Length: 358
Image 1 (cartoon, one colour):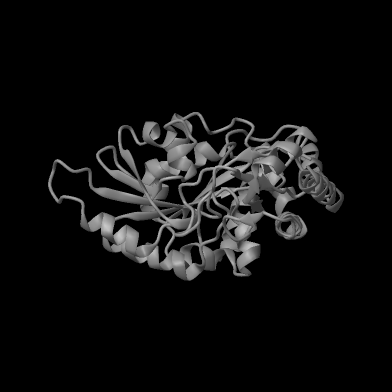
Image 2 (cartoon, rainbow, N blue to C red; image 1 turned 90 degrees about the horizontal axis):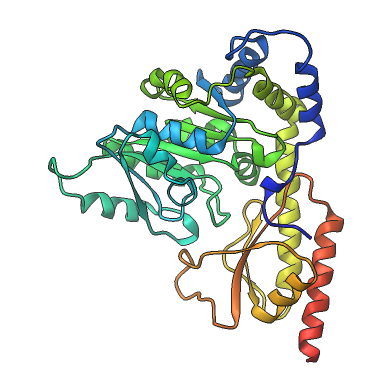
């Protein structure tokens, strides 16, 4: 009953099989191999755009390098205040931006509203003492499991571009958001104004495979050097490319995401059928954020359930977590089974019955 994260799972069989195939024999190093070239072409096909592709092993590396490519050392990068880039990466973006700072904005469900962004920008002094805003970063899906529609992305991109900023998308759960929206990768990114994308695959079936996609030529110009200088260019880069080969084959990546999302929906429906349980935010990807009675939470943990408590900062107006309640996060993965979900729900029902009987 472990729903702590989709990061706790290993790799899917097609990804592992592709990795084993790529392991045989010698191939050129540092991304000069045919597997890497093929994946770079595959990204261009998927996104219907000539795009500069930089493979990296970690999401933190992808985000930090991407932001460094669009924000100079004297600049300001803006995100939601609970975004991964500002809250969970140990200052890596600021480190790679060589002194640039990050500003976090409020927003329900970890989404930035256009009006919030406009108000923040309007309040910045326009003189040399103030770091000028140069980058906006949004998470897809957000840290509260919500998804930006293409129209919402476009609205933020318009404000950013008019203000001299580039738009970065942290796509750690890109596939989960994509299948939820039912749009194309192009519609969710460059067609809506995204300049640089951190494309995540590790959470959805890969071992360690991420990519920085630069739709903006100016950002792409420095990323090859930044990746090498930052220690994220692997000599055996074909082993990242091989994972993505297995990931994309036969739309395996989309099937993985659809399954993870479906398991989250199944989990949410079962939990909200229990007395005293409600959702903090809608389930739009593969994360569930229930508000549980503390007694139920304690009994679930005693039964062996694993999940994490979550922040209350981005609750919608009028919602609050009472002293006898707790807000938690449960995450489903590409390999979560119906039996695992149903086993957790069975334990939750038994715990609820026991609590009612006490």
